[in-house]
Amino acid sequence: MPVILFTSCRSTWNQDDNATLHNACIADAKTWQHPPADPEAYCNCVITKVKQKYPDDNEAMKHIDSLAYDQDLDACRDATSKP
Image (cartoon, rainbow, N blue to C red; front, side):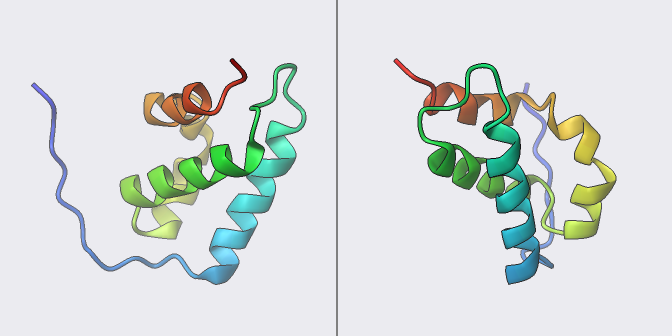
C-alpha cells in the first residue's frame, strides 16, 4: 500500500533555488558515463519531482545525498535515456 504524504501547498523554492539545482543537475549529468539523451528534459523532470517531494527547499538540502538513490528520480533517467 503506498504511503501518501500531505505537505503544505506553499513552496519555498525561488528562482535562484531553481537555477542552482538546474545548473548542478546539468553539470552532474554531463559527467555520467552514459548521460541522458536530453539533459535539459532530465533535469526538468528531476526538479519537478524534488519540488513535489520537498516543497521546502531547506528540507531538500537536508536530504540532498539521498536524492541520488531516489527511485522517483530514477524514473526521470529512464524516461530520458537514449533508446
